[in-house]
Length: 498
Image (cartoon, rainbow, N blue to C red; front, side, top):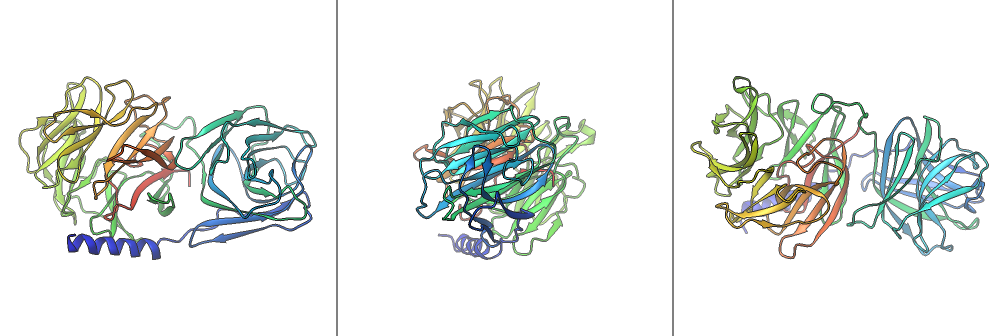
C-alpha cells in the first residue's frame, strides 16, 4: 500500500477513536411516572453518546401507566428517533420501551407512544385519548425493530420502525388531541413491579423540521455535520450551523472536511473543530458541487457567474486556496467528479433544457457528451480505477443508480427499486458505494431539502445494499464525494431547526 495512504488511514482511525466526542445530554430531565415501586434512572455516556434508561413499573396500559421517562417539553411539530437495545433477559415478555408524547407527567395522562415489546417483538402506536381513559393501539407489521421514530406532523402521529439496515414500516393515527406544548422523550417499563429493565438508546436525534410554508432555496433551517461509521452505523455530530451547511468533502489526508455555506467554502479541522474560510478569490457564489482531485492537491468548484445570468460555471484552484481558473465555457455546468489521473472533470451540463453527463479536460477545452437521454442524468463520479463512471438517472421513470464505461459506453442499471436514488459515491478502496434515496412521493428529478431520506451502502461485487442511516435532510446531505481515506466513514449533513 502507498505509505502516504497508509499513514492517512492510521491517522484517521486514531482521530475518530479519540477526538470525536463532544455531545451533550439531549434531555432536560428524567422522572418516574405513576409511582412505580422501584426507582428508575438515566445514565448518559458522553463519549459513546449513548443513553441507558432503567425503570420498573407494573404496566403502561388501561387507564394508568408506570414507567421511567427522560424528556423535554416541546411545542409544534417534531421528529424523534433512536436505535434501541434491551439489555439482559428480562422477566416479562411485554416489557417495553420507545418514545412517548404526553400531555402531563401524571400516570393517567393522555399520550401517544411508539412502543417496542422486548419479549414477543410486538410493535405498536399506543395512545390514550382522554385522561383516565383506556389505552388503544395500532399494531405495526414490524416485529422487534431496532430503530424507532415518532413524528408529530400537525394533528398526525406517525410511528416508523425498522430493523437496522432495512427500510421503515409506518403506522399512524390522527385520533389523539394533545396540546401544543407536550412532554416528549424516551421511556422504559419493565411490566414487573419488582424488577427493573435497562435499555440502551443510540443515535438519538431530536429534529425540529422545516415549517410547511418555508420557501426552499430562499429560507433555510439549521444543519448538523455528522460522521458515520459505515460498518456500525454509529453517528457523531462534529459541527452545527443555524443556517444551511452543505456537501462535505473529506480531504485525502484525513485531517479536514470542506463544505459550502452561503456561497462560500469552509475548511473544518477534525482535530480542533476550528473552521476557516477557504480562499476562492472572486468565486463567492458557489453551489454545493465541489470536488477534490484524487491526489488531494486541487479542488473543483461550481460558481454562479453574474455575467452569465448566474449560471453555474466550473473552476479549479489549489485545495489550499487561490485564484480560480475557469474550465467550462458552456453553462450551466455542475461539477461532480475528477478522473483518478486528474486529466478530466465530469459534470452535469444543461444544454437546451436537457441535463446530461459531460467530461472536459481539467485544464479546459472542448466538452465531450457521455450520456444522451431526455431525462435527468446527474451525480457522476469515476471509480477509483478509472474504468467506470457511476451516476443517477431518471430514464426509467424513477431515479436510479447507473454505471457506464469511462468512454460513455455500456450503460448498466445498478439499482431498481421503489425509491429515487441519488449521488453514488464510490469508496476509496473501490469496494462500496454509498448513496441517498428519497421516497417515491418525491418527484424523480427533484432532490429537495428537508425530507425523510435514507443513506444506503452497497457492496459493488455482490450488489447487496442496506440502509446505514435514517436522516431528515436531502439536498446538501451527500451531494459530493465524502468518504474518509480508509473507506470506513462518510461525512454528511442532516437538518433541524437548532
